Amino acid sequence: MKERDRSKLLVVKGDAVSEDQFLHLADHIPPASFLVFNDTRVIRARLLFSKPTGGQVEIFCLDPLDPPEPETAFLRKGHATWKCLVGNSKKWKSGFLEMSRPGAGLSPGVRIWAERGAPLVDGAFEILFRWKPEELTFSEVLTTFGHIPLPPYIHREDNPQDQDRYQTIYAIHEGSVAAPTAGLHFTDTVMKDLREHDCHFGYVTLHVGAGTFRPVTEEDVSHHVMHHEKISVTPDTLREILQRRDHSLVAVGTTATRTLESLYWAGVKLLTDGPGSHPEVSQWDPYSAKYNCDIPTEDSINALLRYLDQQHLPAYRAETQLMILPGYRFRLVDGLLTNFHMPKSTLLLLVSAFIGDTWKEAYRFALEKDFRFLSYGDACLFLK
Image 1 (spheres, rainbow, N blue to C red):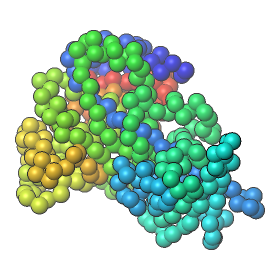
Image 2: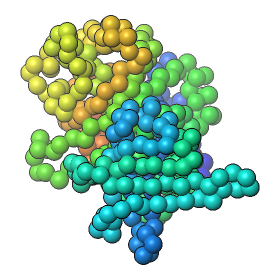
Image 3: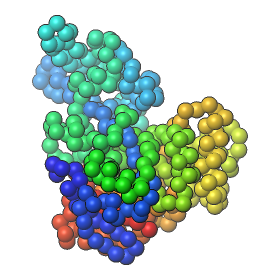
Image 4: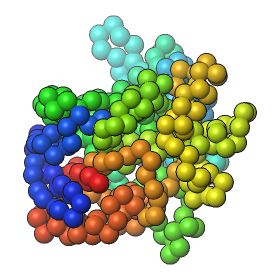
């Protein structure tokens, strides 16, 4: 839809299901709520190289390897190494791939080379990139050559409109290969209306990986291996979570939800495992007897704040593998704003965990009322 906030909004409060327009979101959010957004930014992760013989090889940038931190990887100049998927890899048996763009006027052109290195897990490869002029950052190189990685169920190539439309209006930190789509509906008008309802905003970062599209194919969901994603949360956001515990916390998207709930388990692991422990969240931590011990949320978040202070860290940066399934008890999130998700996805499992079997009635209502599903679709608000 051309105007972001003119999409439909399905609202579920308890057993009541209703329809509205996203523009009126503030009418349905509890007053003085704390909304938490994922401020990741989608990168132009797809690089399409043409071989002299006419074949095309696609390199899909997944994660930085050298340097490994997203905060510095996009500022790297001259060369960088990434974990990448390679399409049509049989056409690239050896040698370098190359692309170039001519300069304008007195400006030099831009050239990039790719060299395939060692194979990695999940069919990925280590890819070394070099480019000239060397003073360009890797972010600038991707802006020159890259394509927006639209979800696989959007059967078309990206176009110039996607460069803006497939980003949230508050996107800052580069690193995602897919948009946190619940945020795509927000406009300055909606944000202004929420502020007028005394709502407050907080921001976390989860860089959405390609694994978010991987379906659950096992009959027994306990055999599914959840993907890892990088998260980053500042002490200021942690403190604001504590300060606003008396008000509803509404997570904008499943990625914000996973990040927020991961904060709780990271603090629990610090309290349980003691000094020297590293607070990263594994897939089954919340379901283990060791960690599922009803530590109060305030104690957990305070433990994480102490850890950051003792380690002199500007933010909690880690990977989370948290998998939220039916039966999970949410520690931080009171409301969930999200899009409609694919069957057999971990995202739909999260929704089911949040509202129980009500999700079936909600999705049935959405189908009857011609709601649009998936990334460029409509939104739904679930409130406990």
